[in-house]
Length: 288
Ligand code: SAH
Image (tube, rainbow, N blue to C red):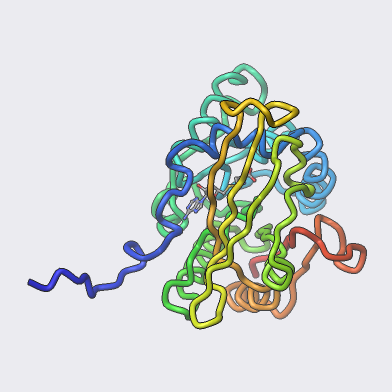
C-alpha cells in the first residue's frame, strides 16, 4: 500500500499552523524574554499610540497578541481591543492578565479569542462589523508562516485576511526582523527594542538551506533566571523557527495585496533614514 501522502494542502504543510508555542516554555518565559515591559512598551507607546491617535483609531485588532503585552498597553491607553492568537498556551497568559485587571477601565470589554490567520475572517467574522480602525501584527509573528508552494500564496492569503478585517482607510501595522542582515551576517542580535532582558544569555541562529537557498531561520533561545547563570535549574532553552523574507520581497507582497504603490517603512520605530542597521522593520499600510 502506498503510504506516501501526495495531497498537499496548506493545512498539512504549513508550519504556521503548527503551534510552536504549544509546549508552553516560551509562553512561561515570554515576559522574561521581553525584559522590562515598560521599557519595551514605551517605544510602542510613543510610536503606535501616536499613530493610532493621529488617525483617530478606536477599535484595534491585535492578530498576534501572544501573552497580551501590546494589547494591554493599548487598553491602558484607552483603545478597544480584540486580541487573537493561535496558541492557547500564549493566550492563557492574556486571559489571566484580563482576569487580574477586570475591574480596571477597558479590561472588562477586552475580547480575547483563539483564532488562526488562515481562517481569521471565519474565526472572528462576528466581531469584524464595519471593520477595525487598525490591525497590528507585531513581534516578528508573521515570519512564522512558511512559503510552502514557493509562490507566497499562503502569506498573501493571510495578508488578505488581515486586510479584510480593516475598514476602508484603516491600516495594518506589521513588523519583521531585519532578515536581510541575518541572512547576510548569520546572527540575530539578542538585545533590541523588543527584547531587552538580561536573562537572554544567547540566541543561537541556524539557517538551513535547500540547494543553497536559505529556507528557514531557527533561533535557540538560552535564558538564565539567575544573574551568574550558575544554577542549572534556572536555565531554560526553547526554539522558534521562522521563514525569512527580505525587505524588498515583503514590501512588494504588501503593496500587491493592499493595491498600493507606496507605504511607509520604519526601522526600530524610527524613519528608515535615521537608523543604521535596524533590528526590526515596521510597515504601515492603509486599506483603500
Ligand atoms: N505580539 C506578541 C507575540 C509575538 S510571538 C509580542 O510581541 O509579545 C508570535 C505569536 O504569533 C505567537 O503567540 C503565535 O502563537 C502567533 N502566531 C503564529 N502563527 C499564527 C497563526 N497562523 N495564527 C494566529 N497566531 C499565530
